[in-house]
Length: 244
Figure 1 (cartoon, rainbow, N blue to C red):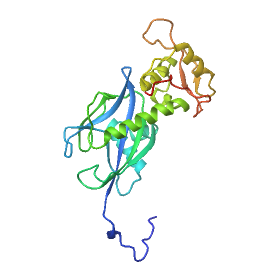
Figure 2: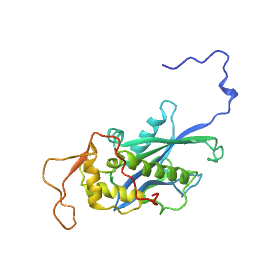
Figure 3: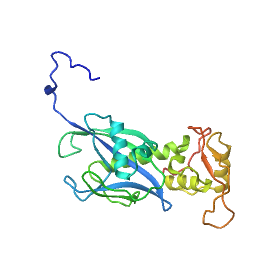
Figure 4: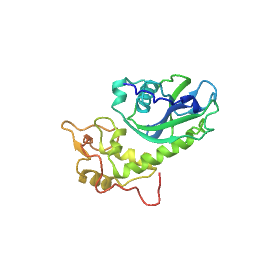
């Protein structure tokens, strides 16, 4: 139910502005951290890579708009997109961030398992997964948003179970370790990583059934699912001197 406007209040006394959502969507593909980008098909910044996003419609919240944009750009169904990890990052409100008009952006970061090639929507010419840092300068202030999102994700891997959001429903410990190595830009000791993961209550749980052939040498690897825990006690800290 829409609230009644207070008597004597004139909304025209304030200059109008638009609200958008921008999405920093990460995945691990081909053993590299990749980000979902769209090449803009219209001005401003036509031809430049940008984060996917769009304007918040009058009848939706910022989070609903972000989920809608995530589904549109990835080609997933609304129901599937609703199950992906999406969290609000920050608000970006520099008055000159968009040459069209005053635009305030609510940015979100999403972590997804490896997905098929995306599709462009709206004013995007096309969309692609590109290696993080190998895409050149982005449109608007999206380089800042992407850098902030990367720092957030790297930090949260230390003290939450967020890494499993990058993995398929059933995964090996090697695939989980690759998430940490890819996001942090480090090489982790395999036995030590395995010991820490299995010693953390609720981080992962074993899957009944045959192990999976991983394509490498050695015996097939056991499969795991994300456990019920959300926080890591103790934290799984990245090696000293590396910030990801």
